[in-house]
Length: 211
Image (cartoon, rainbow, N blue to C red; front, side, top):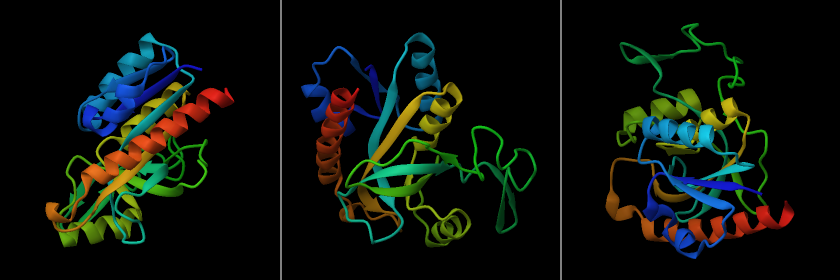
């Protein structure tokens, strides 16, 4: 089985990268954000054949029911910034009629992964943003309109490309912080990265064994 592990920065998967000696496992560092991720992932997939893409990274959680350092599996993604502002309201591209709610690869306005269910990981819904939320009003608006559990800056880009290319994919995220008024003293990136790498190593091993 050929596996492509995708992360935005090497720092997020440094331990996994250092221990990876398998020729059938490639690592792609895309850079931060959905634009860089879309470009680099599309380019790599156009030049290589993979059985599955594993997207690994850290994320912010919207709710305290998730523990800092907890690793979750993302089952769906949304782009909450594609649309227009109408005074204090946001109108999505689906509400504008520019894209159908079930127009491929979307299902009910979401990018839904048909292959989920990693044992012992909670399934969550994500949003992917260019601007990480740090304002109470904007946080409440995105929660009310999109009902996300977590946010990242790359997840939906990976989901969009893989669904378009008909390639299986998995997205795992470790919670490094809560989505709130920016307070880096409450973040724990080292813990999130450590737990992410532990789960990533076990996941990739299982994929290889089960193939």
